[in-house]
Length: 263
Image (cartoon, rainbow, N blue to C red; front, side, top):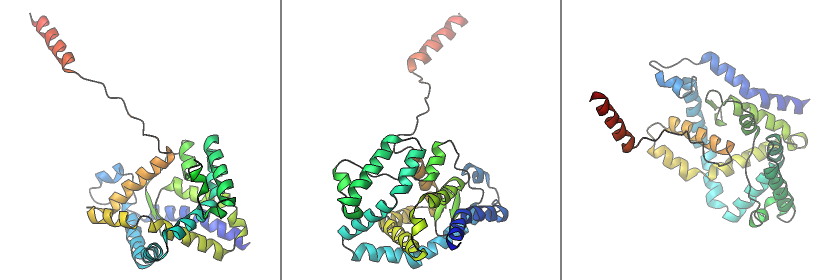
């Protein structure tokens, strides 16, 4: 019963937060750009964003700095590899749900190699064999199925998101077999380790973005959408909208035609 309750909280917690935010948020004065940014909850999102920054500065960034500066790079790589191996069932399931058999084969092959020869992912043998890793989640799967992202959201502690990705996180929880066997303490330890590992990898980049941004919130909103779009397209270039070509020859021909009509 405790396990089922924990799953329900994880799945419906973000959705409940969305409904509460929608009920409380009010558009800012003169908010023409409010709709253009697809951020109708901007006032409340900024409050949550500030809260997340406070918690990050108080807890996650100091932990990430210690992790990055104290542990040797080889150990950090090993921890990241183990975390990636544990996430394989989620990636594989979403590869298959998206109908991408080739990437599913790469995911399965990478897991088979790194989980055995690579000692659970501590050593990334698969990459040396040409089996590159990639990330997939149910939010990306929903996008491939044609679901729109919906309004922009900032979730407490979890950061930038949207309704599609919030639902995706809940579904990925059910897909992950580790949630059915590990204790709550083990799951929290994995979540914390993954958060610290990922935060350590972007410390300098985020510091630079915050230092150079006029509006850090708006910059992070834009970067999140670009990053998610790139993941959904698997790194492929965005489709280019064709623009009609206009040449000076066309202009001169038009001028000659007008002159002839006048004569």
